[in-house]
Length: 372
Image 1 (cartoon, rainbow, N blue to C red):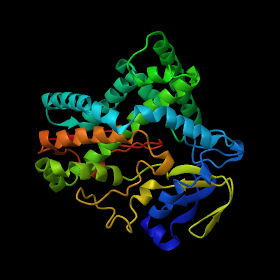
Image 2: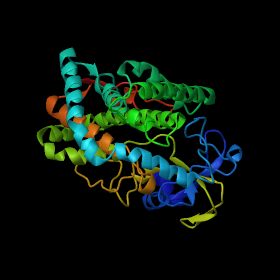
Image 3: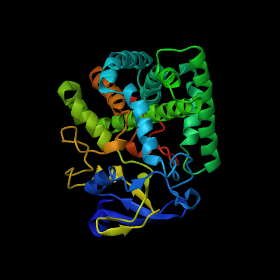
Image 4: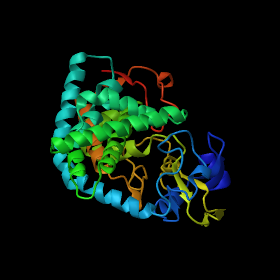
């Protein structure tokens, strides 16, 4: 991306994995600006003719109604935002800390070596999102399998099946919540005036998918970056004041899969001197933007001491991730406690031997063997 940016600038023509053409924007200033530009959207006036990024039923092509997209998005955020305010998330923090401590206790009891993905990265976000949404934790194997199917970028049938199974599960949950309300987000969505069962199920399952899978990946990759640099791991263990910066660098540094956030031009527009025509696919590559050397000097170096306030991992503007406060709380809890509890933790296998998930929206590590 750095070489391409140096030669061709912040936008270039691409061909997606399914052979369709589009544009990829990799400059930080341009990506940040376009994330707030209402001339780009997720919907397309002729969805069947739209360029696709891959076979994912979730993000492979356009979503939503072109004529009502902006109003629909505002309604969705209006329904979700009250459940993820910073105040509510701060109130949840002690429970997240309790869950984290329990997992680390079990990790210590099981002894070294261990798989950090299996022991911490996977169970914590699932435990948290289940409690928050009111989803039975015992169903985790089922909905995680459906979520991974839905995120498949190579097999359209598998992705559609996973998405349908998740929605069907959400519909069952909404019916249960209507009959037996609880103190949870899905109950509150299901009992909100004007919200249909279908809408409540769709929103609930979107939160279930986005609220755990991306954080699972982030914990695993963050731990890898920290443990691959023992000096920074030890610094974090010694000085808790470094935690906030470490978490933001964990959010910025890992490379992102998928090539960018898909958008479609709603009208002709110009991006960095390049004319993009109405209907064309535009990928906003936040991962490349987070590695723009004009904003983050020596961007490929992981550094918990750097200033990362400008990273775009959660987006920017009207579509800024509603779950950002929750993700930060989980990352703060994990890395704050993991480093102090296991200051001697180290990677138990060479980085070159680690296996990453491919063909999926979220990517991430299959396992992360550690020892202490």
